[in-house]
Length: 239
Image 1 (cartoon, rainbow, N blue to C red):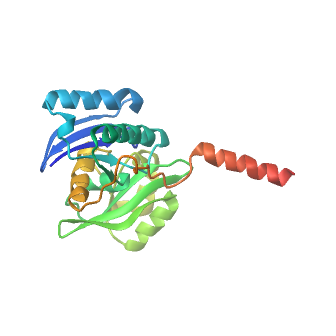
Image 2: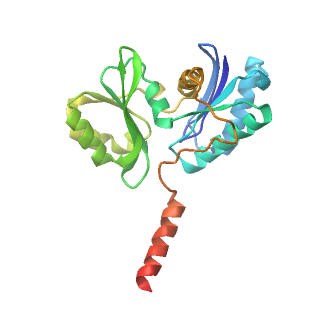
Image 3: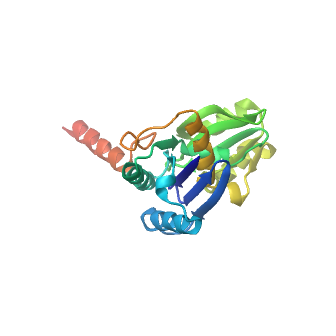
């Protein structure tokens, strides 16, 4: 099984190539460049280094959202373009699930948080039960206060990861004290290797779609759409 994975859902851009159960290449950057500048050159470099023909792929795994609207669109356009050109299926992997998958074997609850602005986070709750990746709460968008209330109610220890940690670390520490810990830097952000391995699991289960069927999972409307709706509502009130 040969699977290419892409993740451009957040600040990180990441590309990985998996053959059977081995990640044979992974290229990740977390720098101030747009994904439109980085994703295809990273993919091209991996193909050159591994000397693999893209036509040999079985599928393309994609971090399908939630996340940055622009990043998700770039990732989807890249995956769909490859899928259509190569006639390969797309395996859509929930972004938050893939983040949690970084922390294989962690005890307690795993809580990825991605900054969604306006004091909101994209998040979910996960744990490993008998070494099996288990979804407690599917990915969603909530306020950080709502999330912390939910976690406090569990009474369990929680490890946090994702770019939302930088924004909400102090509030998390204040609310949870010693029950909160934070993932180390090398597994604290999106990695296409995790998308690939979770995507390989889904592929084996037959969870895939055609390139034309694939669509990003935004979980909420964009800022532009929100602002348009607010203006339209204000106009109705003022009429």
